[in-house]
Image 1 (cartoon, one colour):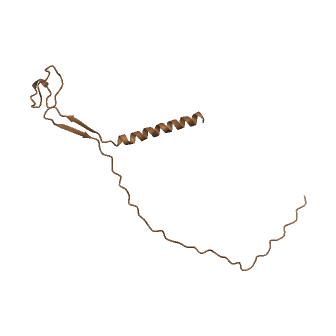
Image 2 (tube, helix red, strand yellow):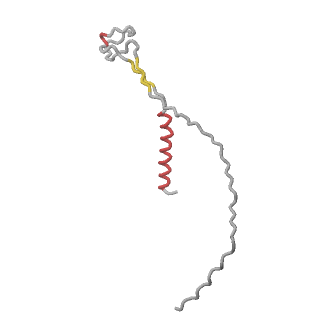
Image 3 (cartoon, rainbow, N blue to C red):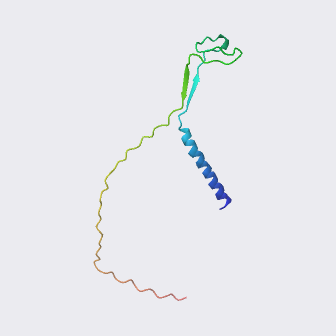
Length: 116
């Protein structure tokens, strides 16, 4: 096997593998949840679901359990076309027969060769 054919085979197999993995992964339904925060300043946050934490912590805390779901769209459903079944029509042909009225005349004799 030549190097060119081997390289072509390897690249074709690689592309087929990537496509075989990418198509099912792209059809996964992914969900991401983001919590809204009502406490921009953790020192002045009075949310009832917050417990006393580390006062030196600089992060914003979630409040009121309000969340947004980010959902990837579903793959579109493919409508299966209905198959129309038509019965086959039977066509019969009669063999063609031609009758010759009479045999034709023989071809004319060949001309003699010309002098050189």
